[in-house]
Image 1 (tube, helix red, strand yellow):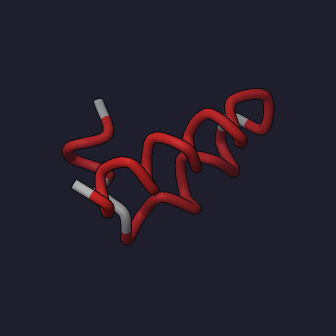
Image 2 (image 1 turned 135 degrees about the vertical axis):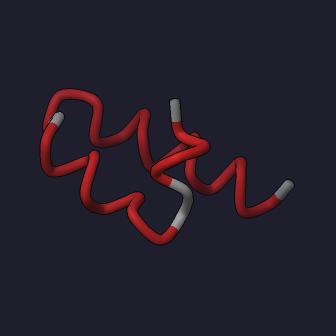
Length: 34
């Protein structure tokens, strides 16, 4: 699910899902770290 969004659009999905903001950021950082 985060593959299409990617780290660049990490902020976009987070805004759409404010409740998953922390989770989305955590996943984004994990992808960037990987």
